Amino acid sequence: MSLDQQQSAVPNPRNPHGLGDPNDTTLRKVEREVLIPKIMRDRARAELCTQEVADFEECCKASSIFMVATCRKQNSALMDCLSRWYQNEAFKEECRVIYLKERSEYRSTGIPKKHRVEKI
Image (cartoon, rainbow, N blue to C red):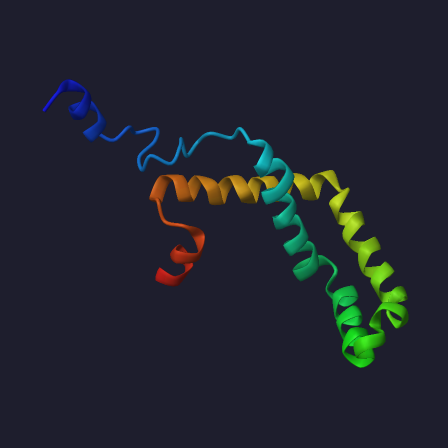
């Protein structure tokens, strides 16, 4: 076995699964512009704008085909609520911390979030 092969067989403590340093807090462009906003959107809909989401869904179910015209008020209320949270810097920071924690767990265990949840 050559020296290069021996060195590559020993795991790097800063990169245990070859997925990156778990303690790294730098963000790539895709993480800043796609992944963190996805967390923001999901949290805002599920936790912060639940009443607006429920109102819009109820209107859409009642209106079926004509929902575009009849649910404008509920849609604008939902969009106002969501955009208010998207512009909140403290909320952005919370979601960034959540993302970095999830990424760190993935990099240190090598197990994706959806599989971690299933095994618990």
